[in-house]
Image (tube, rainbow, N blue to C red; front, side, top):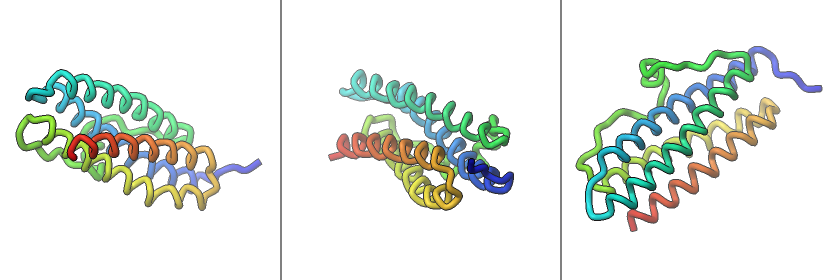
Amino acid sequence: MYHLSPNQKQIIADILIKLLADEHLLYLKTRNAHWNVEGPDFHTIHVYFEELYNELQVVIDDVAEKIRQKDVYAPATMGEYLQLAHLSETPIEGHSSLSYIGALLHDHEVIINFLVDSIPTIEELNDASTTDFLVGLLEQHQKTAWMLRSHLK
């Protein structure tokens, strides 16, 4: 049976910790969009943003549990997330659906790029379950990005 060394677990956990921070910031930004969107498409987009943040709640929990499976504690404060994340708290200009969609699309693409860059490292460590988990998240973020991008056309 293959076992990861403590060092290998830490390398994987460090990637997952950054992902957890990004997912948390994306969750908060999606909640912000849900609460504050305005315009003629308000109801449709308000409901859509709710679907997105509910999906992210599940992702956040799954990522944190994956970190714990590596015998590492998951960070759980906004201060830690802000230091670890690739995303920023940049305010969104205006409250239209298009402004929020554009900002959320950007953040999904940042996470997509991070996952694309990180998956080979996990593969090299022969952690098939974490590789599979991250590929699934990559597909989820790519699908959401496609849907957001489609709104902007």
